[in-house]
Amino acid sequence: MTKTIQTTWLLYCRPGFEADCAQETLRQARQQKPVIAEQEAVQTDSGYVTLNLNDQTLRYSELVFARQLIQLQLVLETLPERDRLTPILEAIAMLPGKFGALWLEVPDTNDGKTLSAFTRRFQPLLEDALREQARLEDNPREQRLHLFFPDKSTVLIGTSDPHNSAPWHMGMLRQHMPSEAPSRSTLKLAEAIEVFMDKSEQSRLLRQGMTAVDLGAAPGGWTWQLVKRGLRVTAVDNGPMKGTMAKHPLVQHLRQDGFKFAPARAVDWLVCDMVEKPAKVAKLIGDWFIAGYARQAIFNLKLPMKQRINAVDAALSEIKSRLDEEGINYRMLAKQLYHDREEITVFLVRTKR
Image (cartoon, rainbow, N blue to C red; front, side, top):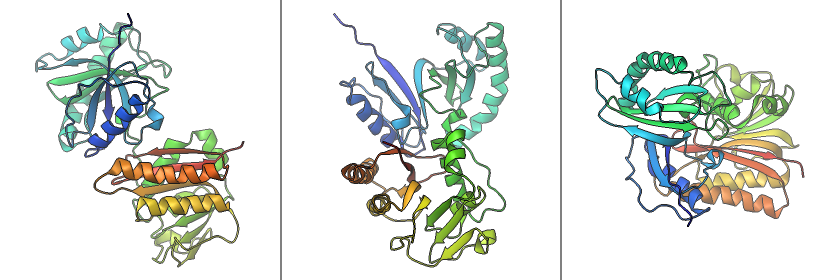
């Protein structure tokens, strides 16, 4: 008789997207085998979900709405206010192995922010104790230990695989707003570059002298990210470019409709952050890649208020099916980034056969 191993997963997400995060995660799990029926109700605007599965292996890189993927080990409730350290250390003692990092985390909510001062004070106490026990060492190859505090009296204790999770605290890669950039949208492209490409790929795909088209460029936040890396950018938008992007020698501003523009010759990059339905943007991206106008692209898909999973599926499937029909080899990754709001960001690159 085969015994079913039950696993509980803790996933962080953007507040308000808990149902989307749970839905896509369960769908990925069901592709392997039936999911355990009993699931806790999703807490709207909590910034996290917990899911009970069989022994399915979740793939973090293929989850659009999940910021972090943690295997939940223990839950401690009603922690004593005067001594939280002792019961937490006793619980951690039950877990096998060593840990390469210790992350104390809170929900990305207003209530969660009030807990951050507590976790900063508590972190060194727990770190010192675990190092004395030889349970914690600075080793990026070892599993990480996560202590997630939805409130001061409750802690969810879990572990993450460094090769199947986000490498950032709370699963969030925060970017600092450059004073020279003309808009905060610049943070979205800066984050996308770091999330989707490692340093070697950035060096190879974002080289000085390369060319790019920025559709819906105004006021120039995404163009600024490309120009600072030495790319020549054709900025397409009926609106004005602002700040240094208005007259930069590497920028050619064309006052045209981004959906009607076609380059005279192929470029290395297409970036696009236009406010339009996902289906329309997906068709545009497909047109560009089939025509051979660009080899790489980063673009945003603005999501509807309802049926967000369906909108994402339809848009990405539209691109995949068209490129597959044309025999184009590619790699495509999609994530709702920390600096995204009601949207997701997609990275698409042609690959060799």
